[in-house]
Image 1: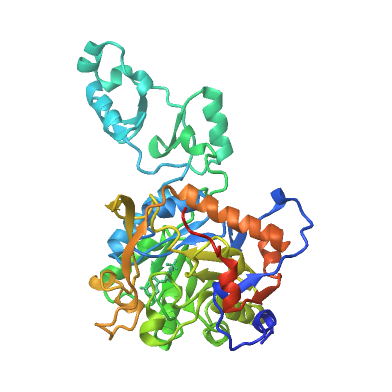
Image 2: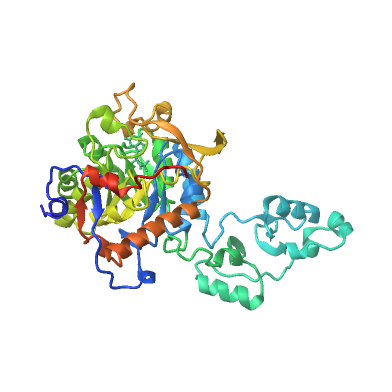
Amino acid sequence: MTDYYRNKVHSKEIIATFDDALILPGYTYFNPNEVDFSSKLGNYHFHLPIMSAAMDTVTEEEMAIKMALMGGLGVIHRNCSYEKQLKMVRNVKRARSFVIDDVATISPDEPVAKAKHFMENYGISGLVVIDDDSKVCGIFTKRDIPYMEEDCKKGFVKDFMTEDVISIAPGASREDALNILFKHRIEKLPIIEDGNLKGLITIKDLKPEFPLASIDEEGRLLCALAISPKFPQSQESLSILKEIDNYVDIFFIDVADFYKKEDIDGTKKLIELLDADFVIGNIGTYEAAEFILTKCNYPEDKFIGLKVGMGSGSICTTSIQTGVGAPTFYATAQVADAIADYSPKIGLIADGGFKNPGDLPKAFAAGADLIMSGHFFAGSTESPGYIDTIQGRKVKIYRGMGSKEARSTNYILDRYSEDSKMLPEGVSDYVPFVGDLDGVLQTLEEGLTNGMIYAGAKTIQELKKVKIGIITSIGQTEQRPHDLLGRF
Ligand code: XMP
Protein backbone atom coordinates (compact mmCIF):
# COMPACT_ATOMS: atom_id res chain seq x y z
CA MET A 1 0.00 0.00 0.00
CA THR A 2 1.35 3.42 -0.87
CA ASP A 3 1.28 6.27 1.57
CA TYR A 4 -0.95 8.41 -0.60
CA TYR A 5 -3.58 8.90 2.06
CA ARG A 6 -1.19 8.83 5.02
CA ASN A 7 0.98 11.47 3.37
CA LYS A 8 -1.96 13.71 2.91
CA VAL A 9 -3.61 13.45 6.27
CA HIS A 10 -0.87 11.97 8.42
CA SER A 11 -3.06 9.30 9.99
CA LYS A 12 -4.86 6.51 8.20
CA GLU A 13 -7.40 6.37 10.97
CA ILE A 14 -8.79 9.86 10.45
CA ILE A 15 -11.96 9.50 8.41
CA ALA A 16 -11.76 12.94 6.87
CA THR A 17 -14.51 14.72 4.94
CA PHE A 18 -14.40 17.65 2.51
CA ASP A 19 -14.87 20.14 5.33
CA ASP A 20 -11.90 18.67 7.21
CA ALA A 21 -9.55 19.19 4.30
CA LEU A 22 -7.97 22.19 2.69
CA ILE A 23 -5.64 22.34 -0.29
CA LEU A 24 -2.46 24.29 0.38
CA PRO A 25 -1.69 27.09 -2.10
CA GLY A 26 0.93 26.23 -4.71
CA TYR A 27 3.14 28.03 -7.24
CA THR A 28 1.14 28.96 -10.34
CA TYR A 29 3.43 28.74 -13.35
CA PHE A 30 0.68 29.05 -16.02
CA ASN A 31 -1.83 31.63 -17.21
CA PRO A 32 -5.39 31.32 -15.87
CA ASN A 33 -6.74 30.63 -19.37
CA GLU A 34 -4.44 27.60 -19.66
CA VAL A 35 -6.29 25.62 -16.96
CA ASP A 36 -7.47 22.33 -18.44
CA PHE A 37 -9.86 20.30 -16.31
CA SER A 38 -10.68 17.71 -18.94
CA SER A 39 -10.46 14.12 -17.75
CA LYS A 40 -10.64 10.48 -18.86
CA LEU A 41 -12.56 7.38 -17.90
CA GLY A 42 -11.49 4.30 -19.85
CA ASN A 43 -11.25 5.48 -23.44
CA TYR A 44 -13.83 8.21 -22.94
CA HIS A 45 -12.72 11.81 -22.85
CA PHE A 46 -14.66 14.42 -20.88
CA HIS A 47 -14.15 18.16 -21.24
CA LEU A 48 -16.01 18.56 -17.97
CA PRO A 49 -15.13 16.05 -15.22
CA ILE A 50 -18.62 16.18 -13.73
CA MET A 51 -21.46 13.63 -13.65
CA SER A 52 -25.05 13.88 -12.51
CA ALA A 53 -26.14 11.16 -10.09
CA ALA A 54 -28.21 8.11 -11.03
CA MET A 55 -31.22 9.23 -9.00
CA ASP A 56 -34.86 9.48 -10.03
CA THR A 57 -35.10 13.16 -9.07
CA VAL A 58 -31.83 13.99 -10.85
CA THR A 59 -31.09 12.14 -14.08
CA GLU A 60 -33.53 11.09 -16.76
CA GLU A 61 -33.07 11.69 -20.48
CA GLU A 62 -33.30 15.50 -20.37
CA MET A 63 -30.52 15.77 -17.78
CA ALA A 64 -28.45 13.05 -19.50
CA ILE A 65 -28.64 14.87 -22.84
CA LYS A 66 -27.74 18.26 -21.37
CA MET A 67 -24.89 16.91 -19.23
CA ALA A 68 -23.36 15.19 -22.25
CA LEU A 69 -23.85 18.27 -24.45
CA MET A 70 -22.01 20.35 -21.83
CA GLY A 71 -19.05 17.94 -21.82
CA GLY A 72 -19.89 15.86 -18.73
CA LEU A 73 -22.09 12.80 -18.28
CA GLY A 74 -25.52 12.12 -16.79
CA VAL A 75 -26.08 8.61 -15.44
CA ILE A 76 -29.73 7.63 -15.93
CA HIS A 77 -31.29 6.13 -12.80
CA ARG A 78 -32.68 2.63 -12.36
CA ASN A 79 -35.79 3.22 -10.29
CA CYS A 80 -38.04 2.24 -13.20
CA SER A 81 -38.74 -0.60 -15.64
CA TYR A 82 -36.27 -1.77 -18.28
CA GLU A 83 -38.83 -0.56 -20.84
CA LYS A 84 -38.60 3.00 -19.55
CA GLN A 85 -34.81 2.78 -19.38
CA LEU A 86 -34.75 1.58 -23.00
CA LYS A 87 -36.82 4.55 -24.12
CA MET A 88 -34.56 6.99 -22.28
CA VAL A 89 -31.24 5.62 -23.49
CA ARG A 90 -32.54 5.46 -27.06
CA ASN A 91 -33.49 9.13 -26.88
CA VAL A 92 -30.08 10.11 -25.49
CA LYS A 93 -28.29 8.29 -28.30
CA ARG A 94 -30.53 9.82 -30.92
CA ALA A 95 -30.39 13.34 -29.52
CA ARG A 96 -27.35 14.39 -31.47
CA SER A 97 -26.80 11.75 -34.05
CA PHE A 98 -26.03 13.37 -37.37
CA VAL A 99 -27.96 10.55 -38.98
CA ILE A 100 -31.69 10.40 -38.27
CA ASP A 101 -33.01 6.83 -38.36
CA ASP A 102 -36.73 7.49 -37.93
CA VAL A 103 -37.18 9.59 -41.04
CA ALA A 104 -40.57 11.19 -41.59
CA THR A 105 -41.94 10.00 -44.95
CA ILE A 106 -45.05 10.48 -47.07
CA SER A 107 -46.62 8.91 -50.14
CA PRO A 108 -46.62 10.91 -53.40
CA ASP A 109 -50.40 10.46 -53.61
CA GLU A 110 -51.14 12.24 -50.33
CA PRO A 111 -52.66 15.74 -50.46
CA VAL A 112 -50.32 18.69 -49.94
CA ALA A 113 -52.54 19.81 -47.07
CA LYS A 114 -51.73 16.62 -45.18
CA ALA A 115 -47.97 17.05 -45.70
CA LYS A 116 -48.20 20.68 -44.55
CA HIS A 117 -50.22 19.74 -41.47
CA PHE A 118 -47.77 16.94 -40.61
CA MET A 119 -44.72 19.19 -40.90
CA GLU A 120 -46.29 21.97 -38.84
CA ASN A 121 -47.48 19.63 -36.09
CA TYR A 122 -44.21 17.78 -35.67
CA GLY A 123 -41.90 20.74 -36.30
CA ILE A 124 -40.30 19.04 -39.33
CA SER A 125 -39.12 21.05 -42.32
CA GLY A 126 -39.23 18.28 -44.93
CA LEU A 127 -40.51 14.80 -45.78
CA VAL A 128 -38.95 12.09 -47.91
CA VAL A 129 -41.44 10.80 -50.49
CA ILE A 130 -41.70 7.02 -50.77
CA ASP A 131 -43.63 5.21 -53.52
CA ASP A 132 -45.68 1.99 -53.31
CA ASP A 133 -42.53 -0.13 -53.82
CA SER A 134 -40.91 1.51 -50.76
CA LYS A 135 -38.43 3.36 -52.98
CA VAL A 136 -37.50 7.03 -52.63
CA CYS A 137 -39.17 9.03 -55.42
CA GLY A 138 -38.82 12.61 -54.18
CA ILE A 139 -38.41 15.05 -51.33
CA PHE A 140 -41.01 17.55 -50.16
CA THR A 141 -39.81 20.44 -48.00
CA LYS A 142 -41.41 23.60 -46.64
CA ARG A 143 -40.04 25.42 -49.67
CA ASP A 144 -42.19 23.19 -51.91
CA ILE A 145 -45.47 24.12 -50.24
CA PRO A 146 -47.40 26.03 -52.92
CA TYR A 147 -47.96 29.70 -52.33
CA MET A 148 -51.61 29.63 -53.46
CA GLU A 149 -54.04 28.44 -50.77
CA GLU A 150 -56.11 26.68 -53.46
CA ASP A 151 -53.12 24.57 -54.56
CA CYS A 152 -52.51 23.62 -50.95
CA LYS A 153 -56.05 22.40 -50.57
CA LYS A 154 -56.35 20.49 -53.83
CA GLY A 155 -52.78 19.62 -54.86
CA PHE A 156 -50.92 16.38 -54.24
CA VAL A 157 -47.38 15.85 -52.97
CA LYS A 158 -46.28 14.36 -56.33
CA ASP A 159 -47.19 17.61 -58.12
CA PHE A 160 -44.89 19.81 -56.00
CA MET A 161 -42.10 17.57 -54.68
CA THR A 162 -38.51 17.69 -55.96
CA GLU A 163 -38.04 14.49 -57.94
CA ASP A 164 -34.34 14.74 -58.48
CA VAL A 165 -33.24 13.78 -54.98
CA ILE A 166 -29.64 14.54 -54.06
CA SER A 167 -28.56 11.75 -51.74
CA ILE A 168 -25.57 10.09 -50.11
CA ALA A 169 -24.60 6.44 -49.58
CA PRO A 170 -24.66 4.78 -46.12
CA GLY A 171 -21.46 5.09 -44.07
CA ALA A 172 -20.45 8.49 -45.49
CA SER A 173 -18.49 10.78 -43.18
CA ARG A 174 -19.60 14.09 -41.67
CA GLU A 175 -17.27 15.94 -44.03
CA ASP A 176 -18.66 14.21 -47.14
CA ALA A 177 -22.19 15.07 -46.06
CA LEU A 178 -21.31 18.69 -45.33
CA ASN A 179 -19.62 19.08 -48.73
CA ILE A 180 -22.69 17.86 -50.61
CA LEU A 181 -25.08 19.98 -48.52
CA PHE A 182 -23.03 23.12 -49.15
CA LYS A 183 -22.41 22.39 -52.83
CA HIS A 184 -26.11 21.99 -53.59
CA ARG A 185 -27.29 24.56 -51.03
CA ILE A 186 -29.72 22.08 -49.53
CA GLU A 187 -30.61 21.35 -45.92
CA LYS A 188 -31.57 17.68 -46.05
CA LEU A 189 -29.66 14.76 -47.44
CA PRO A 190 -31.38 11.36 -47.58
CA ILE A 191 -29.16 8.29 -47.24
CA ILE A 192 -30.17 5.93 -50.02
CA GLU A 193 -29.05 2.44 -50.99
CA ASP A 194 -30.56 0.68 -54.03
CA GLY A 195 -33.39 3.19 -54.00
CA ASN A 196 -34.25 2.37 -50.37
CA LEU A 197 -34.22 5.02 -47.66
CA LYS A 198 -31.61 4.27 -44.95
CA GLY A 199 -31.64 7.52 -43.00
CA LEU A 200 -31.44 11.28 -43.27
CA ILE A 201 -28.76 13.86 -42.58
CA THR A 202 -29.73 17.47 -41.94
CA ILE A 203 -27.47 20.51 -41.89
CA LYS A 204 -28.85 21.41 -38.47
CA ASP A 205 -27.51 18.21 -36.93
CA LEU A 206 -24.09 18.63 -38.50
CA LYS A 207 -23.43 22.02 -36.94
CA PRO A 208 -21.07 21.80 -33.97
CA GLU A 209 -23.42 23.68 -31.63
CA PHE A 210 -21.88 22.09 -28.55
CA PRO A 211 -18.22 21.67 -29.49
CA LEU A 212 -17.28 20.25 -26.08
CA ALA A 213 -20.00 17.59 -25.98
CA SER A 214 -19.15 14.09 -24.75
CA ILE A 215 -19.56 11.99 -27.87
CA ASP A 216 -18.88 8.51 -29.19
CA GLU A 217 -16.96 7.66 -32.36
CA GLU A 218 -20.02 8.31 -34.49
CA GLY A 219 -20.64 11.76 -33.02
CA ARG A 220 -23.58 10.63 -30.88
CA LEU A 221 -23.86 11.65 -27.23
CA LEU A 222 -22.32 9.32 -24.67
CA CYS A 223 -24.96 7.46 -22.73
CA ALA A 224 -24.62 5.98 -19.22
CA LEU A 225 -27.15 3.93 -17.31
CA ALA A 226 -27.38 2.60 -13.74
CA ILE A 227 -28.28 -1.08 -13.34
CA SER A 228 -28.64 -3.59 -10.56
CA PRO A 229 -25.83 -6.13 -10.11
CA LYS A 230 -28.46 -8.87 -10.20
CA PHE A 231 -28.69 -10.92 -13.38
CA PRO A 232 -32.17 -10.53 -14.97
CA GLN A 233 -34.56 -13.21 -13.73
CA SER A 234 -36.81 -13.60 -16.78
CA GLN A 235 -36.07 -14.20 -20.46
CA GLU A 236 -38.08 -11.10 -21.28
CA SER A 237 -35.99 -8.85 -19.00
CA LEU A 238 -32.85 -10.38 -20.40
CA SER A 239 -33.78 -9.55 -23.96
CA ILE A 240 -34.74 -5.93 -23.12
CA LEU A 241 -31.45 -5.50 -21.26
CA LYS A 242 -29.61 -6.73 -24.34
CA GLU A 243 -31.46 -4.19 -26.44
CA ILE A 244 -30.62 -1.46 -23.92
CA ASP A 245 -26.98 -2.47 -24.36
CA ASN A 246 -27.14 -1.27 -28.00
CA TYR A 247 -27.54 2.33 -26.83
CA VAL A 248 -25.42 2.43 -23.68
CA ASP A 249 -21.70 3.22 -23.55
CA ILE A 250 -21.17 2.73 -19.81
CA PHE A 251 -23.23 0.74 -17.32
CA PHE A 252 -22.94 1.85 -13.71
CA ILE A 253 -23.49 -0.97 -11.24
CA ASP A 254 -25.51 0.92 -8.70
CA VAL A 255 -25.59 -0.25 -5.09
CA ALA A 256 -24.93 1.48 -1.79
CA ASP A 257 -22.23 -1.05 -0.84
CA PHE A 258 -20.71 -3.13 -3.65
CA TYR A 259 -18.19 -5.04 -1.52
CA LYS A 260 -20.38 -8.19 -1.32
CA LYS A 261 -19.91 -11.63 -2.83
CA GLU A 262 -23.39 -11.70 -4.32
CA ASP A 263 -22.99 -8.37 -6.14
CA ILE A 264 -19.46 -9.16 -7.26
CA ASP A 265 -20.61 -12.47 -8.82
CA GLY A 266 -23.75 -10.98 -10.40
CA THR A 267 -21.69 -8.21 -11.97
CA LYS A 268 -19.29 -10.74 -13.47
CA LYS A 269 -22.18 -12.39 -15.33
CA LEU A 270 -23.49 -9.04 -16.53
CA ILE A 271 -20.07 -8.03 -17.86
CA GLU A 272 -19.96 -11.29 -19.80
CA LEU A 273 -23.47 -10.73 -21.19
CA LEU A 274 -23.28 -7.08 -22.21
CA ASP A 275 -20.98 -5.24 -24.64
CA ALA A 276 -20.83 -1.81 -22.97
CA ASP A 277 -18.20 -0.78 -20.43
CA PHE A 278 -18.71 -0.96 -16.67
CA VAL A 279 -18.18 1.30 -13.69
CA ILE A 280 -18.59 -0.46 -10.37
CA GLY A 281 -19.70 1.00 -7.06
CA ASN A 282 -19.97 2.19 -4.51
CA ILE A 283 -17.07 1.22 -2.34
CA GLY A 284 -15.27 3.14 0.40
CA THR A 285 -11.99 1.54 1.43
CA TYR A 286 -8.57 0.51 0.19
CA GLU A 287 -9.36 -3.12 1.02
CA ALA A 288 -12.54 -3.19 -1.07
CA ALA A 289 -10.72 -1.68 -4.05
CA GLU A 290 -7.78 -4.07 -3.60
CA PHE A 291 -10.16 -7.04 -3.56
CA ILE A 292 -12.01 -5.91 -6.70
CA LEU A 293 -8.81 -5.09 -8.56
CA THR A 294 -6.96 -8.28 -7.67
CA LYS A 295 -9.50 -11.03 -6.95
CA CYS A 296 -12.51 -10.52 -9.20
CA ASN A 297 -10.99 -11.09 -12.64
CA TYR A 298 -13.17 -8.53 -14.35
CA PRO A 299 -12.02 -8.12 -17.96
CA GLU A 300 -9.62 -5.20 -18.28
CA ASP A 301 -11.14 -3.92 -21.50
CA LYS A 302 -14.65 -3.52 -20.05
CA PHE A 303 -14.17 -2.70 -16.37
CA ILE A 304 -13.13 0.95 -16.56
CA GLY A 305 -13.91 2.60 -13.25
CA LEU A 306 -14.72 2.53 -9.54
CA LYS A 307 -17.24 4.84 -7.91
CA VAL A 308 -16.68 5.69 -4.27
CA GLY A 309 -18.33 7.24 -1.23
CA MET A 310 -20.85 5.87 1.24
CA GLY A 311 -23.10 7.92 3.42
CA SER A 312 -21.99 11.48 2.79
CA GLY A 313 -24.65 12.39 0.23
CA SER A 314 -26.93 15.29 1.14
CA ILE A 315 -29.96 12.95 1.25
CA CYS A 316 -28.12 9.94 2.77
CA THR A 317 -28.82 8.48 6.17
CA THR A 318 -26.93 5.20 5.71
CA SER A 319 -24.17 6.14 8.17
CA ILE A 320 -26.68 7.29 10.78
CA GLN A 321 -28.99 4.33 10.40
CA THR A 322 -26.31 1.63 10.23
CA GLY A 323 -23.19 3.09 11.83
CA VAL A 324 -21.19 2.25 8.68
CA GLY A 325 -19.93 4.67 6.07
CA ALA A 326 -16.99 6.01 4.14
CA PRO A 327 -17.23 9.76 3.44
CA THR A 328 -16.43 10.59 -0.16
CA PHE A 329 -13.19 12.47 0.54
CA TYR A 330 -11.78 9.60 2.62
CA ALA A 331 -13.04 6.94 0.21
CA THR A 332 -11.49 8.76 -2.75
CA ALA A 333 -8.05 8.95 -1.15
CA GLN A 334 -8.23 5.31 -0.03
CA VAL A 335 -9.28 3.93 -3.40
CA ALA A 336 -6.83 6.19 -5.25
CA ASP A 337 -4.08 4.40 -3.32
CA ALA A 338 -5.32 0.97 -4.34
CA ILE A 339 -5.70 2.01 -7.98
CA ALA A 340 -2.16 3.40 -7.98
CA ASP A 341 -0.91 0.13 -6.47
CA TYR A 342 -2.74 -2.37 -8.67
CA SER A 343 -4.36 -0.89 -11.75
CA PRO A 344 -3.50 2.69 -12.66
CA LYS A 345 -5.73 2.65 -15.74
CA ILE A 346 -8.93 2.34 -13.70
CA GLY A 347 -10.86 5.61 -13.40
CA LEU A 348 -12.06 6.93 -10.05
CA ILE A 349 -15.34 8.75 -9.52
CA ALA A 350 -15.95 10.58 -6.24
CA ASP A 351 -19.69 10.37 -5.60
CA GLY A 352 -21.79 12.54 -3.28
CA GLY A 353 -21.25 14.92 -0.40
CA PHE A 354 -20.31 17.97 -2.47
CA LYS A 355 -21.77 21.09 -0.89
CA ASN A 356 -19.73 23.91 -2.43
CA PRO A 357 -17.76 24.38 -5.67
CA GLY A 358 -14.57 24.33 -3.53
CA ASP A 359 -15.22 20.66 -2.69
CA LEU A 360 -14.48 19.70 -6.30
CA PRO A 361 -10.74 20.56 -6.28
CA LYS A 362 -10.49 18.71 -2.95
CA ALA A 363 -11.92 15.53 -4.50
CA PHE A 364 -9.47 15.70 -7.42
CA ALA A 365 -6.61 16.44 -5.05
CA ALA A 366 -7.57 13.29 -3.13
CA GLY A 367 -7.26 11.29 -6.36
CA ALA A 368 -10.58 11.45 -8.28
CA ASP A 369 -10.76 11.56 -12.09
CA LEU A 370 -14.38 12.70 -12.15
CA ILE A 371 -16.96 13.75 -9.58
CA MET A 372 -20.66 12.88 -9.29
CA SER A 373 -23.35 14.92 -7.60
CA GLY A 374 -27.10 14.85 -7.15
CA HIS A 375 -27.30 17.80 -4.78
CA PHE A 376 -25.99 20.38 -7.28
CA PHE A 377 -28.39 19.34 -10.02
CA ALA A 378 -31.66 18.24 -8.35
CA GLY A 379 -33.00 21.81 -8.34
CA SER A 380 -32.22 22.57 -11.99
CA THR A 381 -34.62 22.88 -14.91
CA GLU A 382 -33.33 19.65 -16.46
CA SER A 383 -34.01 17.38 -13.45
CA PRO A 384 -37.25 15.34 -13.52
CA GLY A 385 -40.29 16.67 -11.66
CA TYR A 386 -42.22 19.89 -11.37
CA ILE A 387 -41.30 23.25 -9.92
CA ASP A 388 -43.35 23.88 -6.78
CA THR A 389 -43.63 27.03 -4.71
CA ILE A 390 -43.18 27.19 -0.94
CA GLN A 391 -43.58 30.58 0.76
CA GLY A 392 -42.91 32.30 -2.54
CA ARG A 393 -39.75 30.29 -3.24
CA LYS A 394 -39.49 28.02 -6.23
CA VAL A 395 -38.49 24.48 -5.23
CA LYS A 396 -38.15 20.94 -6.62
CA ILE A 397 -38.19 17.59 -4.84
CA TYR A 398 -34.91 15.78 -4.20
CA ARG A 399 -35.06 12.32 -2.67
CA GLY A 400 -32.52 9.71 -1.65
CA MET A 401 -32.84 6.42 -3.48
CA GLY A 402 -33.00 4.76 -0.05
CA SER A 403 -35.82 7.02 1.14
CA LYS A 404 -39.24 5.59 1.94
CA GLU A 405 -40.69 7.46 -1.05
CA ALA A 406 -38.15 6.17 -3.60
CA ARG A 407 -38.38 2.63 -2.26
CA SER A 408 -42.14 2.49 -2.79
CA THR A 409 -41.27 0.94 -6.20
CA ASN A 410 -39.69 -2.52 -6.36
CA TYR A 411 -36.92 -1.55 -8.73
CA ILE A 412 -34.50 0.00 -6.27
CA LEU A 413 -34.84 -2.33 -3.27
CA ASP A 414 -31.64 -4.23 -4.05
CA ARG A 415 -29.60 -1.01 -3.91
CA TYR A 416 -29.64 -1.50 -0.15
CA SER A 417 -30.05 -4.47 2.19
CA GLU A 418 -32.96 -6.21 0.53
CA ASP A 419 -34.24 -7.84 3.71
CA SER A 420 -34.63 -4.48 5.35
CA LYS A 421 -38.19 -3.36 4.76
CA MET A 422 -38.63 -0.72 7.44
CA LEU A 423 -35.34 1.12 7.69
CA PRO A 424 -35.00 4.01 5.25
CA GLU A 425 -31.42 4.96 4.35
CA GLY A 426 -32.25 8.29 2.79
CA VAL A 427 -34.60 11.23 3.04
CA SER A 428 -36.81 13.19 0.68
CA ASP A 429 -37.14 16.98 0.75
CA TYR A 430 -37.45 20.14 -1.29
CA VAL A 431 -34.40 21.91 -2.68
CA PRO A 432 -34.36 25.44 -4.14
CA PHE A 433 -34.99 25.73 -7.87
CA VAL A 434 -31.67 26.87 -9.34
CA GLY A 435 -32.52 27.48 -13.02
CA ASP A 436 -30.84 25.96 -16.05
CA LEU A 437 -28.00 23.50 -15.80
CA ASP A 438 -25.71 25.86 -17.76
CA GLY A 439 -25.62 28.30 -14.83
CA VAL A 440 -25.07 25.57 -12.24
CA LEU A 441 -22.20 24.09 -14.22
CA GLN A 442 -20.63 27.47 -14.81
CA THR A 443 -20.44 28.10 -11.06
CA LEU A 444 -18.84 24.69 -10.51
CA GLU A 445 -16.40 25.25 -13.36
CA GLU A 446 -15.36 28.60 -11.91
CA GLY A 447 -14.82 27.10 -8.44
CA LEU A 448 -12.73 24.33 -9.94
CA THR A 449 -10.73 26.64 -12.20
CA ASN A 450 -9.94 29.13 -9.45
CA GLY A 451 -9.05 26.30 -7.08
CA MET A 452 -6.63 24.93 -9.67
CA ILE A 453 -5.07 28.35 -10.15
CA TYR A 454 -4.54 28.87 -6.39
CA ALA A 455 -3.24 25.31 -5.99
CA GLY A 456 -0.84 25.74 -8.91
CA ALA A 457 -2.27 22.81 -10.86
CA LYS A 458 -2.80 23.24 -14.60
CA THR A 459 -4.45 19.86 -15.14
CA ILE A 460 -6.42 17.31 -13.13
CA GLN A 461 -3.33 15.08 -13.09
CA GLU A 462 -1.35 17.93 -11.50
CA LEU A 463 -4.18 18.63 -9.07
CA LYS A 464 -3.90 15.02 -7.88
CA LYS A 465 -0.37 15.80 -6.69
CA VAL A 466 -1.00 18.95 -4.63
CA LYS A 467 -0.74 18.98 -0.85
CA ILE A 468 -3.78 18.74 1.37
CA GLY A 469 -3.89 19.63 5.04
CA ILE A 470 -6.41 18.68 7.71
CA ILE A 471 -8.01 21.62 9.40
CA THR A 472 -9.13 21.77 13.04
CA SER A 473 -12.81 22.27 13.87
CA ILE A 474 -12.01 25.79 15.13
CA GLY A 475 -10.25 26.40 11.83
CA GLN A 476 -13.37 25.23 9.97
CA THR A 477 -15.37 27.96 11.68
CA GLU A 478 -12.76 30.54 10.76
CA GLN A 479 -12.95 29.46 7.11
CA ARG A 480 -16.55 30.63 6.89
CA PRO A 481 -17.84 34.21 7.07
CA HIS A 482 -17.87 35.15 10.76
CA ASP A 483 -18.44 37.93 13.26
CA LEU A 484 -20.93 39.69 11.02
CA LEU A 485 -24.32 41.13 11.91
CA GLY A 486 -25.97 38.91 9.25
CA ARG A 487 -28.42 41.55 8.06
CA PHE A 488 -28.03 40.89 4.33
P1 XMP B 1 -25.36 14.26 -3.00
O1 XMP B 1 -24.50 14.73 -1.87
O2 XMP B 1 -24.98 14.81 -4.30
O3 XMP B 1 -25.14 12.68 -3.07
O4 XMP B 1 -26.81 14.49 -2.65
C1 XMP B 1 -25.65 11.90 -4.13
C2 XMP B 1 -25.19 10.47 -3.97
O5 XMP B 1 -25.73 9.89 -2.76
C3 XMP B 1 -25.95 8.49 -2.96
N1 XMP B 1 -27.34 8.21 -2.58
C4 XMP B 1 -27.73 7.77 -1.37
N2 XMP B 1 -27.00 7.36 -0.31
N3 XMP B 1 -29.01 6.92 0.86
C5 XMP B 1 -27.66 6.94 0.83
O6 XMP B 1 -27.03 6.56 1.82
C6 XMP B 1 -29.81 7.30 -0.17
O7 XMP B 1 -31.02 7.30 -0.08
C7 XMP B 1 -29.11 7.74 -1.35
N4 XMP B 1 -29.57 8.14 -2.56
C8 XMP B 1 -28.45 8.43 -3.29
C9 XMP B 1 -25.65 8.18 -4.41
O8 XMP B 1 -24.39 7.59 -4.47
C10 XMP B 1 -25.70 9.55 -5.07
O9 XMP B 1 -24.92 9.62 -6.23
